[in-house]
Image 1 (cartoon, one colour):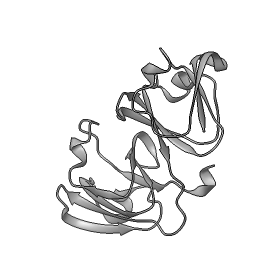
Image 2 (cartoon, rainbow, N blue to C red):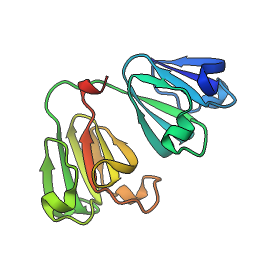
Image 3 (cartoon, helix red, strand yellow):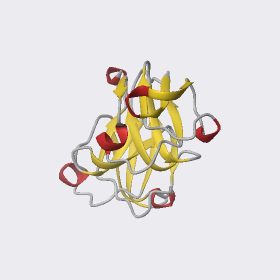
Image 4 (cartoon, rainbow, N blue to C red):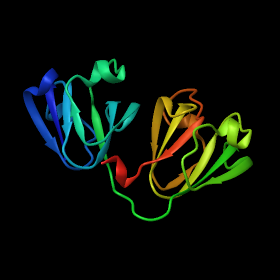
Length: 174
């Protein structure tokens, strides 16, 4: 469960959400703070789960815009289902599952150091939910990856973003 507030410090009108919401504007005219009571969520600065993405776990975000460097309000959110069991993802050097392939079952803080890979252009998430980051050591912009095939990561609305580290979204993040 996540509660969004129009103003900083949990002030103004609020909207409680426990599932995906593609367009928050029908509930709030703006959103400047939120409180995650249970679970994990991705929030987006554009409607329909587009634009910059931010991962939120249980906690209070009194002024998330300055905390995360967000330059716009939250416009949509996606609940991340909890996963129990193994985590598996294949990453590929080129789009359409081309080039070198490596299978991950745990976090990777730097694909260049671990695999001598300069970029990850496509991936196949078999098990679990993952966050991919544009910089090593889980820094920079991120993208939420749920099970499925991603043939071209450049065509996912994040511009010319490269992915250099990956992390599992685990139960312990609650």
